[in-house]
Length: 484
Image 1 (cartoon, one colour):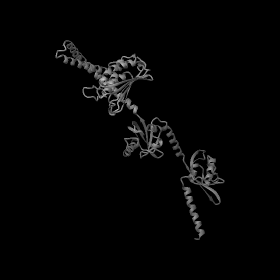
Image 2: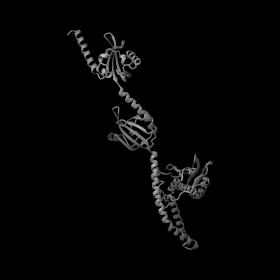
Image 3: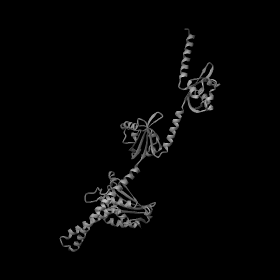
Image 4: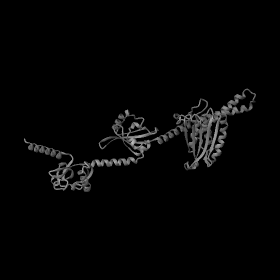
């Protein structure tokens, strides 16, 4: 075989390979004249996609399938100038007039003296629909009040919404470079595979967890994890809600139920103690008046009287705690009330070498309250403040106004309240004082009285730097109480 025959054979082989690739390609393939736009060849996939037969195509121009002829011609010019080798999105039309999106991979070359273009065209309708769905999903989740996290099988974040960024204090870019283990102390990297398989098996899983902000603050969350397949990929789509407020309300409800039950018990015990205690106190006082000071039984009788009086005060506290005593509201001046309460405290403060400071705002108005009970709150708080400063110190009592509330603040420079017991200080009979120095009812009574006044009490404390209790009372109880 001479050289010419070899060349001819190579060309035949090359054409056969081209024809095989051209005809069997899953993409729609076109060969057309760049100058006249006459279609020179099409494959079976093109006929199936566009709805024209091969004979019909060979009588048409390429522009007949362009839904955007100006943009398509501009792309052809860019291709000739070697500016592009791929067209990611154009719109074509079928024989029935339907418009659909395509991506085009074109190639320009000379064939038998003609400028021709080969185009491999792929229908991307499904992909465009998926991208639109994803954009809608992004829009919907970005406007959700709950935090949303999408994670891949390795636990990496592939999508987060604005609420997630706001709740944790990270930017979107920072979160997208992180894993679940970076924000959830209960899900380290080694635990993730098991968690992923569990969600994959259950499809939906709801649990309570903890998240950690960029500053290191940890807060409780309710997590709903969903296993989804999106565009052929597996994801853990998780919606997260901060439940700090809900847990606080649940704790208040639990505490109220506990106090109600203990209150009923305390009322029963107090009533049972009242009668024998009255007899003991009556006889002790009667005998003490008759016995002269020189009598050796005088001191023991006065001790019996003193201890009986202490027991009676404890019973009165139990009755107050039991909810059977209803506050007697009347309009009163909180400044006068505070000064009267402090007159009972200041003498004790001097003995304990505690300096008392008063900060009273000038614009405090009269308030509907049970004056005796609020005075008891102040005395209890001041007494606790002095107990927290056994070596002396300073406690400050402040009275102010905030909108339609008054605030009463008692702050000390004592030892402070450890974080681990702050939630328990309101419980009846809970105390850190030595035996015989406290009943554990003081702060419970404070809490009960505040609740009956439809108020609120907040605590700020740091170990070694003291504690501050702030009581908020509404100006008018008539606005708080339901109509009769």
